[in-house]
Length: 96
Image (tube, rainbow, N blue to C red):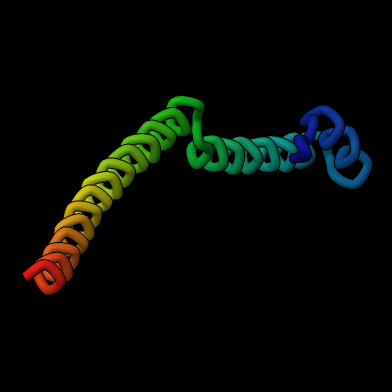
């Protein structure tokens, strides 16, 4: 990001304008740059913003991990019940 030095701008404008006009123009440029910079700085993410975002992502990841473990447990219980049922049916069919 380029910053303008007010004195340099004033010196560049002084040959083309009288001193009051050059001073007013350089003040207007400085004011515009300050406004632009303050707008940019207000939109920048701070370190605390990034830390909050990281905490949110970690929390969501932990919740997702918990859900996955829960559903895996339910799936494996269902699989074990199905296998026990099939083996029981086969054993009863052969040993009857």
